[in-house]
Image (cartoon, rainbow, N blue to C red):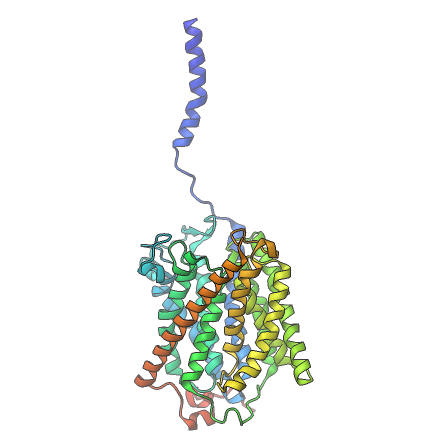
Amino acid sequence: MTLRKFAGLGALLSLIMPALAMAADPAPAPVLNSGDTSWMLTSTALVLFMTIPGLALFYGGMVRSKNILSVMMQCFAITGLITILWFIYGYSMAFDTTGMEAGVVNLNSFVGGLGKAFLAGITPASITGPAALFPEAVFVTFQMTFAIITPALIVGAFAERMKFSAMLIFMGVWFTLVYAPIAHMVWGGAGSLLGDWGVLDFAGGTVVHINAGIAGLVACLVLGKRKGYPTTPMAPHNLGYTLIGAAMLWIGWFGFNAGSAAAANGTAGMAMLVTQIATAAAALGWMFAEWLTHGKPSALGIASGVVAGLVAITPAAGTVGPMGALVIGLAAGVVCFFCATSLKRKLGYDDSLDAFGVHGIGGILGAILTGVFAAPSMGGFNAATTDVAAQVWVQCKGVGFTIIYTAIVTYVILKVLDVVMGLRVTDEEESVGLDLAQHNERGYNL
Protein backbone atom coordinates (compact mmCIF):
# COMPACT_ATOMS: atom_id res chain seq x y z
CA MET A 1 0.00 0.00 0.00
CA THR A 2 2.79 2.36 0.96
CA LEU A 3 4.65 1.61 -2.25
CA ARG A 4 1.50 2.41 -4.22
CA LYS A 5 1.22 5.79 -2.42
CA PHE A 6 4.84 6.66 -3.22
CA ALA A 7 4.33 5.59 -6.79
CA GLY A 8 1.25 7.82 -7.04
CA LEU A 9 3.08 10.73 -5.44
CA GLY A 10 5.97 10.27 -7.86
CA ALA A 11 3.60 10.34 -10.80
CA LEU A 12 1.95 13.50 -9.50
CA LEU A 13 5.32 15.20 -8.99
CA SER A 14 6.37 14.22 -12.48
CA LEU A 15 3.38 16.17 -13.80
CA ILE A 16 3.78 19.20 -11.52
CA MET A 17 7.56 19.76 -11.72
CA PRO A 18 7.72 20.66 -15.45
CA ALA A 19 4.91 23.18 -14.90
CA LEU A 20 6.78 24.70 -11.95
CA ALA A 21 9.94 24.86 -14.02
CA MET A 22 8.10 26.62 -16.82
CA ALA A 23 6.59 29.13 -14.39
CA ALA A 24 10.04 29.92 -13.05
CA ASP A 25 11.48 30.56 -16.49
CA PRO A 26 11.70 34.24 -17.55
CA ALA A 27 9.15 35.51 -20.07
CA PRO A 28 10.20 34.84 -23.64
CA ALA A 29 11.98 37.69 -25.39
CA PRO A 30 9.80 39.72 -27.78
CA VAL A 31 9.98 38.45 -31.34
CA LEU A 32 10.18 40.87 -34.26
CA ASN A 33 7.08 40.75 -36.47
CA SER A 34 8.02 41.01 -40.14
CA GLY A 35 4.54 42.25 -41.15
CA ASP A 36 4.55 45.11 -38.65
CA THR A 37 8.14 45.91 -39.56
CA SER A 38 7.35 46.03 -43.29
CA TRP A 39 4.37 48.33 -42.72
CA MET A 40 6.34 50.70 -40.51
CA LEU A 41 9.21 50.84 -43.01
CA THR A 42 6.71 51.68 -45.74
CA SER A 43 4.93 54.27 -43.59
CA THR A 44 8.22 55.96 -42.74
CA ALA A 45 9.06 56.34 -46.42
CA LEU A 46 5.56 57.68 -47.14
CA VAL A 47 5.81 60.37 -44.45
CA LEU A 48 9.22 61.55 -45.67
CA PHE A 49 7.72 61.59 -49.18
CA MET A 50 5.19 64.12 -47.86
CA THR A 51 7.91 66.71 -47.24
CA ILE A 52 10.30 65.93 -50.08
CA PRO A 53 8.99 66.19 -52.71
CA GLY A 54 5.33 66.58 -51.67
CA LEU A 55 5.30 69.75 -49.57
CA ALA A 56 8.18 71.25 -51.58
CA LEU A 57 6.08 71.02 -54.76
CA PHE A 58 2.83 72.01 -53.06
CA TYR A 59 4.34 75.20 -51.66
CA GLY A 60 6.69 75.75 -54.60
CA GLY A 61 3.85 76.00 -57.10
CA MET A 62 1.97 78.56 -55.00
CA VAL A 63 4.72 81.18 -54.78
CA ARG A 64 5.83 83.48 -57.57
CA SER A 65 8.33 82.08 -60.04
CA LYS A 66 11.18 84.14 -58.54
CA ASN A 67 10.80 82.32 -55.22
CA ILE A 68 10.22 78.67 -56.12
CA LEU A 69 13.76 77.52 -55.35
CA SER A 70 13.82 79.34 -52.02
CA VAL A 71 10.74 77.46 -50.79
CA MET A 72 12.01 74.10 -52.05
CA MET A 73 15.45 74.82 -50.60
CA GLN A 74 13.89 75.54 -47.22
CA CYS A 75 12.05 72.19 -47.26
CA PHE A 76 15.24 70.31 -48.13
CA ALA A 77 17.39 72.20 -45.62
CA ILE A 78 14.87 71.60 -42.85
CA THR A 79 14.90 67.89 -43.69
CA GLY A 80 18.65 67.78 -43.19
CA LEU A 81 18.73 70.00 -40.11
CA ILE A 82 15.97 68.22 -38.17
CA THR A 83 17.39 64.80 -39.01
CA ILE A 84 20.66 65.66 -37.28
CA LEU A 85 19.00 67.40 -34.31
CA TRP A 86 16.66 64.42 -33.89
CA PHE A 87 19.70 62.15 -33.76
CA ILE A 88 21.59 64.32 -31.27
CA TYR A 89 18.84 65.09 -28.76
CA GLY A 90 15.38 65.39 -30.34
CA TYR A 91 14.32 61.76 -30.05
CA SER A 92 15.46 61.68 -26.45
CA MET A 93 13.64 64.91 -25.56
CA ALA A 94 10.44 63.60 -27.11
CA PHE A 95 10.44 59.95 -26.04
CA ASP A 96 12.83 59.37 -23.13
CA THR A 97 10.57 58.39 -20.21
CA THR A 98 13.14 58.66 -17.41
CA GLY A 99 11.63 60.19 -14.26
CA MET A 100 8.03 59.92 -15.46
CA GLU A 101 5.19 58.55 -13.36
CA ALA A 102 1.49 58.49 -14.21
CA GLY A 103 -0.41 61.24 -12.45
CA VAL A 104 2.73 62.98 -11.19
CA VAL A 105 3.60 66.38 -12.68
CA ASN A 106 7.32 67.17 -12.79
CA LEU A 107 9.85 68.46 -15.30
CA ASN A 108 9.69 65.18 -17.21
CA SER A 109 5.96 65.69 -17.70
CA PHE A 110 6.91 68.53 -20.06
CA VAL A 111 10.04 67.22 -21.76
CA GLY A 112 11.97 63.97 -21.90
CA GLY A 113 15.46 63.51 -20.56
CA LEU A 114 18.71 62.96 -22.44
CA GLY A 115 19.05 59.25 -21.73
CA LYS A 116 18.69 58.49 -25.43
CA ALA A 117 20.83 61.37 -26.73
CA PHE A 118 22.81 60.37 -29.81
CA LEU A 119 20.39 57.38 -29.90
CA ALA A 120 22.25 55.70 -27.04
CA GLY A 121 21.36 52.06 -26.56
CA ILE A 122 19.56 51.63 -29.87
CA THR A 123 20.90 48.61 -31.76
CA PRO A 124 19.59 46.33 -34.51
CA ALA A 125 18.23 44.13 -31.71
CA SER A 126 16.22 46.94 -30.06
CA ILE A 127 12.52 46.24 -30.51
CA THR A 128 9.55 48.51 -29.80
CA GLY A 129 5.89 48.98 -30.69
CA PRO A 130 2.56 48.29 -28.95
CA ALA A 131 3.57 44.67 -28.46
CA ALA A 132 7.33 45.21 -29.02
CA LEU A 133 7.20 43.82 -32.53
CA PHE A 134 9.34 46.06 -34.79
CA PRO A 135 12.82 47.61 -34.57
CA GLU A 136 13.19 50.73 -32.46
CA ALA A 137 15.40 52.13 -35.22
CA VAL A 138 12.33 52.17 -37.46
CA PHE A 139 10.29 53.96 -34.78
CA VAL A 140 13.08 56.55 -34.42
CA THR A 141 13.03 57.21 -38.16
CA PHE A 142 9.23 57.20 -38.37
CA GLN A 143 8.93 59.85 -35.66
CA MET A 144 11.82 61.75 -37.23
CA THR A 145 9.73 62.26 -40.39
CA PHE A 146 6.98 63.87 -38.25
CA ALA A 147 9.57 66.16 -36.69
CA ILE A 148 10.77 67.10 -40.19
CA ILE A 149 7.43 68.02 -41.74
CA THR A 150 6.16 70.09 -38.80
CA PRO A 151 8.63 73.01 -39.09
CA ALA A 152 8.51 72.70 -42.89
CA LEU A 153 4.79 73.47 -42.75
CA ILE A 154 5.56 76.82 -41.07
CA VAL A 155 7.43 77.91 -44.22
CA GLY A 156 4.10 78.51 -45.94
CA ALA A 157 3.23 81.34 -43.56
CA PHE A 158 6.32 83.50 -44.18
CA ALA A 159 7.19 82.44 -47.74
CA GLU A 160 8.92 84.99 -49.99
CA ARG A 161 10.34 87.26 -47.28
CA MET A 162 12.50 85.54 -44.61
CA LYS A 163 16.28 85.30 -44.77
CA PHE A 164 17.54 81.76 -45.27
CA SER A 165 20.05 82.07 -42.42
CA ALA A 166 17.40 83.33 -40.01
CA MET A 167 15.04 80.56 -41.14
CA LEU A 168 17.59 77.86 -40.35
CA ILE A 169 18.32 79.14 -36.85
CA PHE A 170 14.64 79.75 -36.13
CA MET A 171 13.72 76.20 -37.16
CA GLY A 172 16.48 74.66 -35.05
CA VAL A 173 15.52 76.62 -31.93
CA TRP A 174 11.78 76.16 -32.52
CA PHE A 175 12.21 72.41 -32.90
CA THR A 176 14.11 72.31 -29.61
CA LEU A 177 11.85 74.53 -27.52
CA VAL A 178 8.44 73.86 -29.08
CA TYR A 179 8.16 70.71 -31.18
CA ALA A 180 10.04 68.24 -28.98
CA PRO A 181 8.31 69.32 -25.73
CA ILE A 182 4.82 69.27 -27.29
CA ALA A 183 5.49 65.84 -28.81
CA HIS A 184 6.58 64.59 -25.40
CA MET A 185 3.63 66.13 -23.57
CA VAL A 186 1.17 64.42 -25.93
CA TRP A 187 2.90 61.16 -26.89
CA GLY A 188 5.37 60.64 -24.05
CA GLY A 189 3.25 58.01 -22.30
CA ALA A 190 2.20 57.74 -18.66
CA GLY A 191 3.33 60.86 -16.81
CA SER A 192 3.28 63.19 -19.85
CA LEU A 193 1.18 66.30 -19.23
CA LEU A 194 -1.40 66.21 -22.02
CA GLY A 195 -1.32 62.43 -22.16
CA ASP A 196 -2.36 62.24 -18.51
CA TRP A 197 -5.12 64.74 -19.21
CA GLY A 198 -6.52 62.22 -21.69
CA VAL A 199 -6.00 64.30 -24.85
CA LEU A 200 -6.63 62.20 -27.97
CA ASP A 201 -4.17 62.88 -30.78
CA PHE A 202 -3.67 59.77 -32.84
CA ALA A 203 -1.28 61.06 -35.48
CA GLY A 204 -0.46 64.72 -34.80
CA GLY A 205 -3.41 67.10 -34.97
CA THR A 206 -2.01 68.87 -31.92
CA VAL A 207 1.66 67.95 -32.15
CA VAL A 208 2.04 68.73 -35.84
CA HIS A 209 -0.77 70.88 -37.24
CA ILE A 210 -1.94 73.17 -34.44
CA ASN A 211 1.69 73.54 -33.44
CA ALA A 212 2.83 74.51 -36.95
CA GLY A 213 -0.26 76.57 -37.73
CA ILE A 214 0.01 78.77 -34.64
CA ALA A 215 3.76 79.18 -35.15
CA GLY A 216 3.06 80.19 -38.74
CA LEU A 217 0.52 82.81 -37.69
CA VAL A 218 2.93 84.30 -35.17
CA ALA A 219 5.74 84.30 -37.74
CA CYS A 220 3.76 86.09 -40.43
CA LEU A 221 2.62 88.70 -37.88
CA VAL A 222 6.17 89.31 -36.59
CA LEU A 223 7.70 89.53 -40.07
CA GLY A 224 4.92 91.66 -41.50
CA LYS A 225 3.32 91.58 -44.93
CA ARG A 226 5.10 90.95 -48.21
CA LYS A 227 6.02 94.05 -50.16
CA GLY A 228 2.92 95.11 -52.09
CA TYR A 229 0.49 92.85 -50.25
CA PRO A 230 -2.50 92.87 -50.69
CA THR A 231 -2.72 95.34 -53.59
CA THR A 232 -0.09 93.73 -55.84
CA PRO A 233 -1.21 90.49 -57.58
CA MET A 234 0.71 87.51 -56.16
CA ALA A 235 -0.91 84.63 -58.00
CA PRO A 236 0.62 81.12 -57.82
CA HIS A 237 3.02 80.66 -60.69
CA ASN A 238 2.53 76.91 -61.33
CA LEU A 239 -0.62 75.27 -60.02
CA GLY A 240 0.41 72.07 -61.78
CA TYR A 241 3.19 71.69 -59.21
CA THR A 242 0.72 72.43 -56.42
CA LEU A 243 -1.71 69.74 -57.58
CA ILE A 244 1.10 67.20 -57.92
CA GLY A 245 2.31 68.12 -54.44
CA ALA A 246 -1.21 67.80 -53.03
CA ALA A 247 -1.52 64.35 -54.60
CA MET A 248 1.77 63.32 -52.99
CA LEU A 249 0.58 64.61 -49.64
CA TRP A 250 -2.68 62.67 -49.98
CA ILE A 251 -0.88 59.42 -50.73
CA GLY A 252 1.86 59.99 -48.17
CA TRP A 253 -0.71 60.74 -45.48
CA PHE A 254 -1.69 57.08 -45.36
CA GLY A 255 1.73 56.48 -43.83
CA PHE A 256 1.19 59.46 -41.53
CA ASN A 257 -2.18 58.28 -40.18
CA ALA A 258 -2.35 54.53 -40.73
CA GLY A 259 1.33 54.22 -39.80
CA SER A 260 0.55 55.76 -36.41
CA ALA A 261 -1.14 52.49 -35.45
CA ALA A 262 2.46 51.22 -35.17
CA ALA A 263 1.32 47.83 -36.46
CA ALA A 264 -0.25 46.21 -39.50
CA ASN A 265 -3.61 45.70 -37.83
CA GLY A 266 -7.28 46.68 -37.85
CA THR A 267 -6.60 50.12 -36.41
CA ALA A 268 -4.26 50.88 -39.31
CA GLY A 269 -6.88 49.67 -41.78
CA MET A 270 -9.62 51.85 -40.29
CA ALA A 271 -7.25 54.83 -40.10
CA MET A 272 -6.58 54.46 -43.82
CA LEU A 273 -10.29 54.26 -44.61
CA VAL A 274 -11.34 57.29 -42.56
CA THR A 275 -8.41 59.30 -43.94
CA GLN A 276 -9.62 58.70 -47.48
CA ILE A 277 -13.25 59.53 -46.65
CA ALA A 278 -12.46 62.73 -44.76
CA THR A 279 -10.05 63.97 -47.42
CA ALA A 280 -12.51 63.41 -50.25
CA ALA A 281 -15.28 65.11 -48.26
CA ALA A 282 -13.10 68.13 -47.48
CA ALA A 283 -11.97 68.49 -51.10
CA LEU A 284 -15.59 68.56 -52.25
CA GLY A 285 -16.65 70.78 -49.34
CA TRP A 286 -14.03 73.42 -50.19
CA MET A 287 -14.75 73.15 -53.92
CA PHE A 288 -18.53 73.64 -53.56
CA ALA A 289 -18.13 76.42 -50.98
CA GLU A 290 -15.83 78.26 -53.39
CA TRP A 291 -18.12 77.54 -56.32
CA LEU A 292 -21.13 78.99 -54.53
CA THR A 293 -19.18 81.97 -53.19
CA HIS A 294 -17.05 82.95 -56.21
CA GLY A 295 -18.94 81.41 -59.11
CA LYS A 296 -16.24 78.96 -60.21
CA PRO A 297 -14.33 76.08 -58.58
CA SER A 298 -10.54 76.36 -58.71
CA ALA A 299 -7.66 73.90 -58.82
CA LEU A 300 -5.99 75.74 -55.93
CA GLY A 301 -9.20 75.42 -53.95
CA ILE A 302 -9.61 71.69 -54.34
CA ALA A 303 -5.92 71.14 -53.53
CA SER A 304 -6.29 73.23 -50.39
CA GLY A 305 -9.44 71.31 -49.47
CA VAL A 306 -7.53 68.04 -49.76
CA VAL A 307 -4.94 69.23 -47.27
CA ALA A 308 -7.60 70.63 -44.92
CA GLY A 309 -9.28 67.22 -44.78
CA LEU A 310 -6.01 65.42 -44.20
CA VAL A 311 -5.17 67.80 -41.37
CA ALA A 312 -8.55 67.55 -39.64
CA ILE A 313 -8.76 63.75 -39.66
CA THR A 314 -5.20 63.33 -38.34
CA PRO A 315 -5.96 63.49 -34.59
CA ALA A 316 -9.07 61.34 -35.05
CA ALA A 317 -7.81 58.68 -37.46
CA GLY A 318 -7.36 55.93 -34.87
CA THR A 319 -10.62 56.45 -33.00
CA VAL A 320 -13.42 57.63 -35.31
CA GLY A 321 -15.59 55.66 -37.69
CA PRO A 322 -16.54 56.38 -41.31
CA MET A 323 -19.54 58.62 -40.48
CA GLY A 324 -17.45 60.69 -38.11
CA ALA A 325 -14.78 61.02 -40.81
CA LEU A 326 -17.38 62.27 -43.29
CA VAL A 327 -18.58 65.00 -40.93
CA ILE A 328 -15.04 66.02 -39.93
CA GLY A 329 -13.98 66.22 -43.58
CA LEU A 330 -16.96 68.29 -44.72
CA ALA A 331 -16.60 70.65 -41.78
CA ALA A 332 -12.88 71.09 -42.44
CA GLY A 333 -13.38 71.86 -46.13
CA VAL A 334 -16.02 74.53 -45.53
CA VAL A 335 -14.57 76.11 -42.38
CA CYS A 336 -10.98 76.25 -43.69
CA PHE A 337 -12.20 77.76 -46.97
CA PHE A 338 -13.76 80.72 -45.20
CA CYS A 339 -10.87 81.10 -42.74
CA ALA A 340 -8.18 80.89 -45.42
CA THR A 341 -9.94 83.43 -47.65
CA SER A 342 -12.29 85.75 -45.75
CA LEU A 343 -10.64 85.75 -42.32
CA LYS A 344 -7.15 86.81 -43.36
CA ARG A 345 -8.55 89.51 -45.66
CA LYS A 346 -10.67 90.95 -42.85
CA LEU A 347 -7.87 90.82 -40.26
CA GLY A 348 -5.15 91.88 -42.73
CA TYR A 349 -2.39 89.39 -41.91
CA ASP A 350 -0.26 87.89 -44.70
CA ASP A 351 -0.28 84.13 -44.24
CA SER A 352 1.34 83.62 -47.64
CA LEU A 353 0.28 80.03 -48.37
CA ASP A 354 -2.43 79.60 -45.72
CA ALA A 355 -0.36 77.62 -43.23
CA PHE A 356 -2.53 78.90 -40.38
CA GLY A 357 -5.77 78.90 -42.35
CA VAL A 358 -5.40 75.22 -43.24
CA HIS A 359 -3.15 73.63 -40.62
CA GLY A 360 -4.00 75.81 -37.64
CA ILE A 361 -7.76 76.01 -38.17
CA GLY A 362 -8.03 72.47 -39.56
CA GLY A 363 -5.99 71.08 -36.67
CA ILE A 364 -8.10 72.86 -34.04
CA LEU A 365 -11.36 71.76 -35.66
CA GLY A 366 -10.18 68.16 -36.02
CA ALA A 367 -8.89 67.97 -32.45
CA ILE A 368 -12.19 69.18 -30.98
CA LEU A 369 -14.37 67.00 -33.22
CA THR A 370 -12.23 64.00 -32.24
CA GLY A 371 -13.74 64.37 -28.79
CA VAL A 372 -17.20 64.03 -30.32
CA PHE A 373 -16.77 61.22 -32.82
CA ALA A 374 -14.32 59.00 -30.92
CA ALA A 375 -17.15 57.90 -28.63
CA PRO A 376 -18.75 54.52 -29.45
CA SER A 377 -22.15 56.24 -29.14
CA MET A 378 -21.10 58.42 -32.09
CA GLY A 379 -19.74 55.58 -34.18
CA GLY A 380 -16.18 55.76 -32.84
CA PHE A 381 -13.90 53.12 -31.38
CA ASN A 382 -12.44 54.70 -28.25
CA ALA A 383 -14.07 52.71 -25.45
CA ALA A 384 -12.76 55.17 -22.84
CA THR A 385 -14.84 58.00 -24.31
CA THR A 386 -18.16 57.42 -22.56
CA ASP A 387 -18.87 61.09 -21.79
CA VAL A 388 -18.69 63.11 -25.00
CA ALA A 389 -18.92 66.51 -23.30
CA ALA A 390 -16.09 65.61 -20.91
CA GLN A 391 -13.85 64.44 -23.76
CA VAL A 392 -14.57 67.56 -25.80
CA TRP A 393 -13.53 69.64 -22.77
CA VAL A 394 -10.28 67.66 -22.51
CA GLN A 395 -9.64 68.23 -26.22
CA CYS A 396 -10.30 71.95 -25.81
CA LYS A 397 -7.84 72.11 -22.89
CA GLY A 398 -5.20 70.41 -25.04
CA VAL A 399 -5.86 72.81 -27.92
CA GLY A 400 -5.76 75.84 -25.63
CA PHE A 401 -2.54 74.79 -23.94
CA THR A 402 -0.82 74.15 -27.28
CA ILE A 403 -1.95 77.50 -28.71
CA ILE A 404 -0.72 79.47 -25.71
CA TYR A 405 2.58 77.62 -25.31
CA THR A 406 3.44 77.64 -29.01
CA ALA A 407 2.44 81.27 -29.55
CA ILE A 408 4.45 82.61 -26.62
CA VAL A 409 7.63 80.62 -27.24
CA THR A 410 7.53 81.20 -31.01
CA TYR A 411 7.10 84.94 -30.50
CA VAL A 412 10.05 85.13 -28.11
CA ILE A 413 12.30 83.14 -30.45
CA LEU A 414 11.45 85.36 -33.43
CA LYS A 415 11.86 88.64 -31.55
CA VAL A 416 15.25 87.61 -30.19
CA LEU A 417 16.44 86.52 -33.62
CA ASP A 418 15.17 89.75 -35.15
CA VAL A 419 17.27 91.76 -32.70
CA VAL A 420 20.35 89.55 -33.10
CA MET A 421 20.46 89.02 -36.87
CA GLY A 422 17.28 90.31 -38.49
CA LEU A 423 14.55 88.15 -39.99
CA ARG A 424 13.61 89.75 -43.30
CA VAL A 425 15.44 90.20 -46.55
CA THR A 426 15.78 93.79 -47.78
CA ASP A 427 13.12 95.39 -49.98
CA GLU A 428 15.47 95.14 -52.95
CA GLU A 429 16.10 91.43 -52.35
CA GLU A 430 12.38 90.81 -51.99
CA SER A 431 11.73 92.56 -55.30
CA VAL A 432 14.42 90.57 -57.09
CA GLY A 433 13.20 87.33 -55.53
CA LEU A 434 14.75 85.04 -52.96
CA ASP A 435 16.01 82.58 -55.54
CA LEU A 436 18.60 85.06 -56.80
CA ALA A 437 19.01 87.12 -53.64
CA GLN A 438 19.54 84.19 -51.24
CA HIS A 439 20.83 81.39 -53.47
CA ASN A 440 22.13 83.04 -56.65
CA GLU A 441 20.04 80.67 -58.78
CA ARG A 442 16.94 80.79 -60.93
CA GLY A 443 14.14 78.29 -60.91
CA TYR A 444 13.64 78.77 -64.64
CA ASN A 445 16.09 79.60 -67.44
CA LEU A 446 13.75 80.54 -70.26
